[in-house]
Image 1 (cartoon, protein in one colour):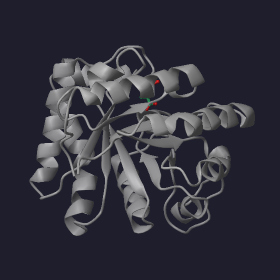
Image 2 (cartoon, helix red, strand yellow; image 1 turned 135 degrees about the vertical axis):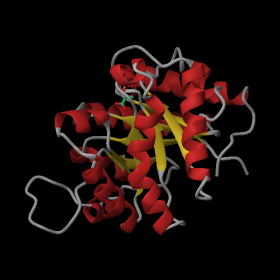
Image 3 (cartoon, protein in one colour; image 1 turned 180 degrees about the horizontal axis):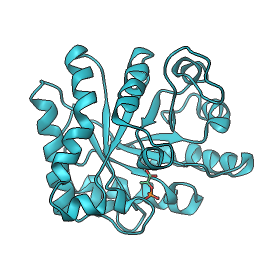
Length: 258
Ligand code: PEP
């Protein structure tokens, strides 16, 4: 049976109780009209529990935007078992904003991946090159480096599930998206890398996805879903985006992975 097309709504540090309630109610009402989509809503942690309660009994899932690992005192952080406890099933790890603002290294990101896997949260690992790295022809080398930790974890635990999100940094929140051919090349590269270890991964594209471009992006070979930031925190945009993604993948036919 083909997989669903994933739509990950990354609300980032946006929203309020009332906006969260409005968005969740709208998605809950309409999600049955998108049979080919699987939605994962990633609100700020403060709204995770209420999102889980609101969406309980639907096939919409909730995910967190980050976690912390280890059991040492870690004021202000949230652990994998806490996220699990309030109903999260997924967790975004290594988002470029965290790599930049919180100076997260690949080592820290690998520890977070490990914590997620140990607690049976599915990690959505974000990778992507800067504009300088792309211009100097280093895109694939950068992506390979960012995936090393995930690959060693998969080699140690072949049953673990990891989703990869290709998010070129120069496309996140900028209004620019990567070209279809560039997306296809990087997604194929990522899938091939994991195939060398007999693992098939779902690869999502992220970076200025909106209602106007989602059908085109969904139709690209090797794209198993999208991660949406800005367009996911406006009711009209996210509903329209889901409508168009549903249409876009209908024209693509069978999805490729897992
Ligand atoms: C993101 O934050 O993961 C993202 C892709 O943001 P945007 O859609 O706003 O570019």
